[in-house]
Length: 81
Image (cartoon, rainbow, N blue to C red; front, side, top):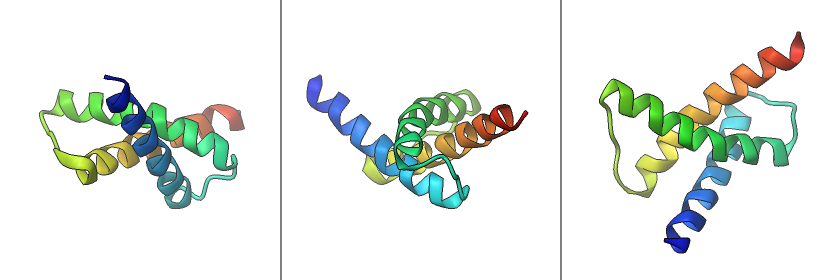
């Protein structure tokens, strides 16, 4: 259980870094990593609602990057107002 959580956090951090580069985020590495971890949960939820699922670590990173991009987009829109 603990190992699964640590792997999820690590994959979320990697995904946040990748999403930060894709979205050209100016929030800094730490913010991108935190948003990537949150984005992993968001991406999983959104794709599960649509009915799409991925397996394996690469699938998890893909889903997390999508979710992190969404979260970074929303956070950037909210903070710019």
